[in-house]
Amino acid sequence: MQQVLDPHRAILLPGGAHPFYVPSRAGAHVASIPIEAHAIRASLFDKRGHAWSNDLALRLDVHFDKAAEFNKAHAALRLLMPLIPALAASSPIHEGRSTGYHSSRLDARKHASDRLPELMGGSLVPEAIFEPEEYDRAILGPIAQALGPHDPNGILDPQEMNARGVTVNFDRGTLTLHVIDAQECPSANMAIVELIIAVLKALVGGRWASTYLQRAWSAEDLDAILLDTIRHGDRAIISNRDYLLMFGLLQQDSMPALKLWQHLFVDLYSELGPAARTWLDHILEHGCLASRIMARIGARPSTEKLRTAYAALAECHALDQAFL
Image (cartoon, rainbow, N blue to C red):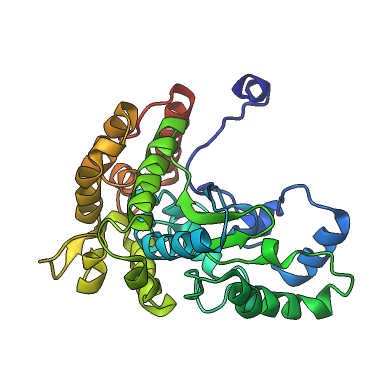
């Protein structure tokens, strides 16, 4: 791909969002979708927002075969998702400025469906629903109803229009996690995914807490933790003692999010491959990519500093090496 871009003096840029892109000036670019669906979406959403056209996520599909598996997987994904930006946030810059958020991508996504709030519900964290029939009734049904006046021919699929941080497609039997920012290179992406999968397997297997206890968490309580990690990344302080209990920490009243990930890494070390261990060592020593970018550019970065930092990121992507 880079060879194709070279004649145009262009580069592939990693990370969770383009740091200089201004949707209101550049125009929005969206994935190829049918013309009818595009027209409806255009009437519903402000395509000048970053969530529409500057969302560089790493999406993870978790497969399930039956209702019981959906129950456990959805409980585990809801519980873990507030912690993920502390490991994977990588988008501290929008439109050439520090935003104050480690994951500006997720901060923008929170407001992507303000015109039709049914698409997201109350927060990025999905409601505590664990039966397919109830999910259809309480989540997909209201989405379909909200879309109805704008989509009389039923072109848009309510499952695809669900804007929560974890979504479901019952036809494919997949739950999709949307809260992972893309990293500096493919190996970093895969290492983060490997650790997330290991933690999810442990949660589904009841390693630290039963599925019954995992299911008891409200969207509001989990969202409070998620909003903190979206803003502060690995520097967020997890001060909910009951949440720490869910990961086997019995005597902690509070803990930095980075320390919690270090605990999970040590606990699940044997479940990880050698390459993932090496990459995760780097991330857990130096912080999530957003923290490393911010350390490189400083509190009030000039355009030149930003260009230098992101040129280094592009080189990391090309060489599949870590950013520091």
